[in-house]
Length: 165
Image 1 (cartoon, rainbow, N blue to C red):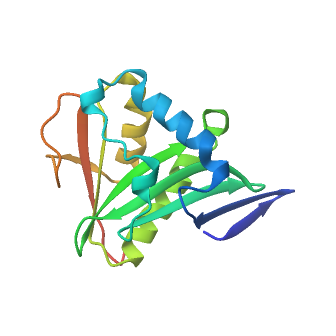
Image 2 (image 1 turned 180 degrees about the vertical axis):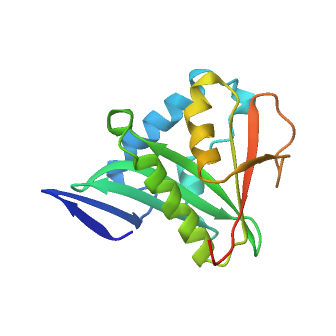
């Protein structure tokens, strides 16, 4: 996604450094939400600094230049990627922005030649909207992948990608 205009508001999704100063609020809220009802040993959120990595493409969703969402695609191997650090600010939820962000991350993964995209999310009720979003996008539950292990507080999901989807 480059830019779309809706009246005077400009929506833009682009690759950025996760260390960009004005992303502090997004990372604070993401961290708050991850720690709200998940035991520390079950939190798989990457530290902000760790998202600066050659195998990670980090994206920021902006509206009128305000950072309102973020997400990343981490290449695990030549054909398998993982969605990391996806978050949309509470005050802009309900407008389809999480789906827009997810669709763009999926499109990026597909264009990067990945054939499978996976993610880990929580089992708690607070994660239900996220799980439903992923299901609507075609993700299905799977077993742990990569370095993950079975965890009663985690749900693992995957999506098979093809160039024709």
